Image 1 (cartoon, rainbow over the protein chains, first blue to last red):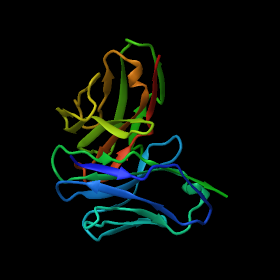
Image 2: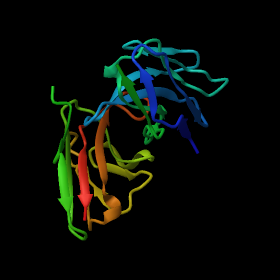
Image 3: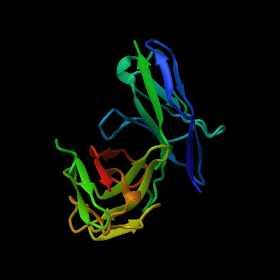
Length: 113
Length: 113
Protein backbone atom coordinates (compact mmCIF):
# COMPACT_ATOMS: atom_id res chain seq x y z
CA UNK A 1 0.00 0.00 0.00
CA UNK A 2 0.87 3.66 -0.05
CA UNK A 3 3.36 4.74 2.59
CA UNK A 4 5.89 7.36 3.66
CA UNK A 5 9.29 6.67 5.19
CA UNK A 6 11.28 9.36 6.99
CA UNK A 7 14.71 9.29 8.51
CA UNK A 8 14.80 8.37 12.16
CA UNK A 9 15.48 11.08 14.66
CA UNK A 10 16.28 12.87 16.74
CA UNK A 11 18.35 15.22 14.65
CA UNK A 12 20.50 17.52 16.76
CA UNK A 13 22.13 20.56 15.14
CA UNK A 14 23.83 23.77 16.13
CA UNK A 15 22.33 27.07 15.08
CA UNK A 16 23.16 28.03 11.46
CA UNK A 17 23.88 24.44 10.46
CA UNK A 18 22.48 22.92 7.26
CA UNK A 19 19.46 20.66 7.66
CA UNK A 20 18.33 17.70 5.58
CA UNK A 21 15.51 15.40 6.60
CA UNK A 22 15.03 12.54 4.18
CA UNK A 23 11.61 11.40 3.03
CA UNK A 24 10.74 8.72 0.51
CA UNK A 25 7.34 7.46 -0.50
CA UNK A 26 5.59 4.51 -2.08
CA UNK A 27 2.43 5.28 -4.01
CA UNK A 28 0.36 3.63 -6.70
CA UNK A 29 -0.79 6.91 -8.25
CA UNK A 30 0.38 10.51 -8.42
CA UNK A 31 0.17 11.98 -4.96
CA UNK A 32 0.68 15.45 -3.65
CA UNK A 33 3.49 15.66 -1.09
CA UNK A 34 3.60 17.70 2.08
CA UNK A 35 5.78 18.64 5.00
CA UNK A 36 3.99 19.43 8.24
CA UNK A 37 5.62 20.83 11.39
CA UNK A 38 4.53 20.32 14.99
CA UNK A 39 5.89 22.75 17.58
CA UNK A 40 5.87 21.63 21.22
CA UNK A 41 2.36 21.38 22.65
CA UNK A 42 0.68 22.28 19.38
CA UNK A 43 -1.11 20.62 16.49
CA UNK A 44 0.43 20.09 13.09
CA UNK A 45 0.59 22.91 10.57
CA UNK A 46 1.46 22.86 6.92
CA UNK A 47 5.04 23.91 6.18
CA UNK A 48 5.16 23.38 2.41
CA UNK A 49 3.75 21.24 -0.35
CA UNK A 50 4.28 20.12 -3.95
CA UNK A 51 1.59 18.75 -6.21
CA UNK A 52 3.50 17.27 -9.14
CA UNK A 53 6.91 15.97 -10.18
CA UNK A 54 9.76 18.53 -10.17
CA UNK A 55 7.70 21.05 -8.20
CA UNK A 56 9.60 22.76 -5.40
CA UNK A 57 7.75 23.78 -2.26
CA UNK A 58 9.25 26.47 -0.04
CA UNK A 59 8.36 28.38 3.09
CA UNK A 60 10.25 30.07 5.96
CA UNK A 61 13.61 29.14 4.40
CA UNK A 62 12.69 25.47 4.10
CA UNK A 63 12.39 23.80 0.71
CA UNK A 64 11.70 20.39 -0.78
CA UNK A 65 11.58 19.14 -4.36
CA UNK A 66 9.20 16.45 -5.59
CA UNK A 67 11.46 13.84 -7.23
CA UNK A 68 9.41 11.22 -9.00
CA UNK A 69 12.44 9.27 -10.28
CA UNK A 70 13.73 8.69 -6.74
CA UNK A 71 10.27 8.87 -5.05
CA UNK A 72 11.66 11.40 -2.62
CA UNK A 73 10.71 14.71 -1.04
CA UNK A 74 13.66 15.65 1.18
CA UNK A 75 13.33 18.71 3.43
CA UNK A 76 16.25 21.16 3.49
CA UNK A 77 17.14 24.43 5.15
CA UNK A 78 20.40 26.27 4.71
CA UNK A 79 20.72 27.73 8.20
CA UNK A 80 18.57 26.47 11.06
CA UNK A 81 17.54 28.50 14.06
CA UNK A 82 16.66 27.49 17.62
CA UNK A 83 13.05 28.34 16.80
CA UNK A 84 13.03 25.56 14.17
CA UNK A 85 13.14 22.93 16.92
CA UNK A 86 10.03 20.84 16.31
CA UNK A 87 8.79 17.53 14.92
CA UNK A 88 8.60 17.37 11.12
CA UNK A 89 6.22 15.05 9.28
CA UNK A 90 6.34 14.11 5.64
CA UNK A 91 2.95 13.17 4.17
CA UNK A 92 1.28 12.25 0.90
CA UNK A 93 -2.28 12.68 -0.29
CA UNK A 94 -4.41 11.90 -3.34
CA UNK A 95 -7.07 13.84 -5.18
CA UNK A 96 -9.51 11.00 -4.72
CA UNK A 97 -12.76 10.79 -2.82
CA UNK A 98 -12.49 9.06 0.51
CA UNK A 99 -8.72 9.35 0.89
CA UNK A 100 -6.79 10.87 3.74
CA UNK A 101 -3.28 12.11 4.30
CA UNK A 102 -0.72 9.38 4.96
CA UNK A 103 2.00 10.45 7.35
CA UNK A 104 5.52 9.34 8.05
CA UNK A 105 6.53 8.69 11.66
CA UNK A 106 7.99 12.14 12.18
CA UNK A 107 11.52 13.41 12.78
CA UNK A 108 12.39 15.41 15.86
CA UNK A 109 14.75 18.32 15.25
CA UNK A 110 16.58 19.95 18.14
CA UNK A 111 18.64 23.08 17.45
CA UNK A 112 20.97 24.49 20.09
CA UNK A 113 22.54 27.95 20.23
CA UNK B 1 -10.35 32.79 13.21
CA UNK B 2 -10.90 29.81 15.48
CA UNK B 3 -10.00 27.16 12.86
CA UNK B 4 -10.26 23.69 14.40
CA UNK B 5 -11.16 23.55 18.08
CA UNK B 6 -10.74 20.43 20.19
CA UNK B 7 -11.96 19.91 23.73
CA UNK B 8 -10.84 18.89 26.25
CA UNK B 9 -7.08 19.44 26.07
CA UNK B 10 -6.34 16.87 28.76
CA UNK B 11 -8.36 13.95 30.11
CA UNK B 12 -7.76 11.06 32.48
CA UNK B 13 -10.15 8.12 32.29
CA UNK B 14 -10.47 4.90 34.18
CA UNK B 15 -10.52 1.65 32.23
CA UNK B 16 -14.05 0.94 31.02
CA UNK B 17 -15.29 4.52 31.13
CA UNK B 18 -16.67 6.18 28.03
CA UNK B 19 -16.20 9.72 26.82
CA UNK B 20 -16.53 11.97 23.79
CA UNK B 21 -13.75 14.09 22.35
CA UNK B 22 -15.20 17.17 20.71
CA UNK B 23 -14.03 18.72 17.45
CA UNK B 24 -15.48 21.75 15.71
CA UNK B 25 -14.32 23.73 12.67
CA UNK B 26 -15.54 27.06 11.37
CA UNK B 27 -14.05 26.94 7.87
CA UNK B 28 -16.99 25.15 6.19
CA UNK B 29 -14.73 22.23 5.32
CA UNK B 30 -16.37 19.09 4.03
CA UNK B 31 -13.59 16.72 5.04
CA UNK B 32 -12.81 15.96 8.70
CA UNK B 33 -10.69 13.27 10.30
CA UNK B 34 -9.38 11.96 13.59
CA UNK B 35 -5.79 10.78 14.14
CA UNK B 36 -3.96 9.40 17.10
CA UNK B 37 -0.31 10.14 17.70
CA UNK B 38 1.86 7.67 19.57
CA UNK B 39 5.64 7.75 20.11
CA UNK B 40 7.46 6.21 17.16
CA UNK B 41 4.20 5.59 15.27
CA UNK B 42 3.53 8.92 13.64
CA UNK B 43 -0.13 9.80 13.05
CA UNK B 44 -2.59 7.02 12.39
CA UNK B 45 -6.03 7.63 10.98
CA UNK B 46 -8.95 6.50 13.16
CA UNK B 47 -12.06 7.68 11.28
CA UNK B 48 -12.87 10.27 8.68
CA UNK B 49 -15.86 11.99 7.15
CA UNK B 50 -16.33 13.42 3.66
CA UNK B 51 -19.45 15.35 4.60
CA UNK B 52 -22.41 15.53 6.96
CA UNK B 53 -23.93 12.09 7.40
CA UNK B 54 -20.99 10.25 5.83
CA UNK B 55 -18.24 8.59 7.85
CA UNK B 56 -15.76 5.79 7.24
CA UNK B 57 -13.07 3.85 9.04
CA UNK B 58 -9.39 4.57 8.90
CA UNK B 59 -6.40 2.47 9.87
CA UNK B 60 -7.18 1.99 13.59
CA UNK B 61 -10.97 2.30 14.14
CA UNK B 62 -11.54 -0.35 16.81
CA UNK B 63 -12.88 1.02 20.08
CA UNK B 64 -13.98 4.33 18.56
CA UNK B 65 -17.23 5.64 17.09
CA UNK B 66 -17.93 8.79 15.13
CA UNK B 67 -20.90 10.60 13.67
CA UNK B 68 -21.25 13.73 11.56
CA UNK B 69 -24.61 15.39 11.92
CA UNK B 70 -23.40 18.86 10.90
CA UNK B 71 -20.61 20.20 8.70
CA UNK B 72 -19.00 21.88 11.71
CA UNK B 73 -18.80 19.07 14.27
CA UNK B 74 -17.12 15.67 14.27
CA UNK B 75 -17.04 14.09 17.75
CA UNK B 76 -15.04 10.97 18.56
CA UNK B 77 -16.51 8.55 21.09
CA UNK B 78 -14.52 6.08 23.14
CA UNK B 79 -16.98 3.33 24.01
CA UNK B 80 -15.08 1.57 26.81
CA UNK B 81 -11.67 3.07 27.41
CA UNK B 82 -8.61 0.82 27.54
CA UNK B 83 -4.99 1.64 28.49
CA UNK B 84 -4.03 1.02 24.83
CA UNK B 85 -6.06 4.12 23.96
CA UNK B 86 -3.69 6.35 25.92
CA UNK B 87 -2.52 8.73 23.24
CA UNK B 88 -2.70 12.24 21.84
CA UNK B 89 -5.70 12.70 19.57
CA UNK B 90 -5.85 15.21 16.75
CA UNK B 91 -8.80 16.34 14.73
CA UNK B 92 -8.20 17.79 11.28
CA UNK B 93 -10.29 19.37 8.56
CA UNK B 94 -9.68 20.21 4.93
CA UNK B 95 -11.57 21.68 2.01
CA UNK B 96 -11.39 18.43 0.09
CA UNK B 97 -9.80 15.03 0.43
CA UNK B 98 -6.17 14.11 0.88
CA UNK B 99 -4.39 16.41 -1.54
CA UNK B 100 -5.38 19.70 0.07
CA UNK B 101 -4.02 21.40 3.18
CA UNK B 102 -5.27 19.91 6.43
CA UNK B 103 -5.84 22.16 9.44
CA UNK B 104 -5.28 20.55 12.81
CA UNK B 105 -6.62 21.20 16.27
CA UNK B 106 -4.26 21.50 19.21
CA UNK B 107 -4.87 17.96 20.34
CA UNK B 108 -6.33 16.10 23.32
CA UNK B 109 -3.93 14.23 25.58
CA UNK B 110 -5.83 11.21 26.91
CA UNK B 111 -4.57 8.92 29.66
CA UNK B 112 -6.44 5.74 30.51
CA UNK B 113 -5.53 4.21 33.86
